[in-house]
Image 1 (cartoon, rainbow, N blue to C red):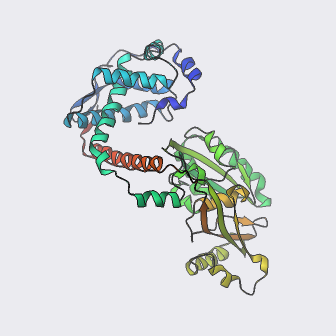
Image 2 (cartoon, rainbow, N blue to C red):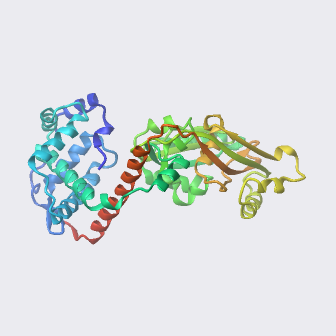
Image 3 (cartoon, rainbow, N blue to C red):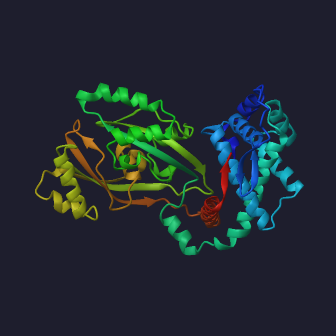
Length: 406
């Protein structure tokens, strides 16, 4: 469970927790609101957890998030009890102390601040107990199955390993022909104010020119270090659900919504250079040119194949280069970040939209430090594997559970 206090600085946390609580209706608060495998969640628990999440500024709707967390907590505790795992009072108090310490507060100070905002100490204690029991269960159940071989570490090094920060992003890239510039700019300003992932995805399906438009612009988890250097600080400045300001590109405008962010266990070796090829096709994003690009895509497997395609044409129809990420144009760098070697993007244009860019990634090379800490990389890979197994186990528990809303 990722610590929720990362959403607040210590000063902001103290300020928010000092707020006067709203008066909560008493009627029916202690009646069952949800049962999970015959275990009761009361209305009071839901309100308390939602209030705590709101104070901690957790992303999303506090009520919905509280419901999901409490259901998962019941499943975690049931599985832990079945395995004979029950955190002791001292372990729970230590866990509460550690959690409060992330806000530079003692356990007593944190509990007092929560209480001043209307959150009972038991709510905090239950939150910590469920997370602690689950971590103990996951360690017992999966740690022995998560060994990492030397070959896997070597592959991680050769690929640049994994970043210490990963982001889950959705994208919209809209063509911006000169005659429609004002209209597209106005639309982009409206989209940048969205905070709903579903609303952003609806706009992506309607207006985006990238291949991801079919699934609402959603991209898979990606190491932040793989993103263009100009985009990295923009994403780090967002909270989940927020959208960047419109980003002007050559012949287009882009927006990115942060859906989630997480910290990993080790940092990736720096990417030294990215090699790519761009083949320029007249006709822009017309149906005829896009059809030709699809045919071309089926014929080429690597960048060298493009020389045969460009043979007999002007020299500037094909551009190939190997550059550090910071030296690559932002729009090109972003499209390349989504590709594996040999893959192609046709999202970009040049010459005011009159030329389609058939962009292919040739390869990446990494700077691997001589003192690269293999133990740290091994730990990171093992933690990723354990986390994936734990997520799968919880999803299975949820699927098998009997959950009744009252």
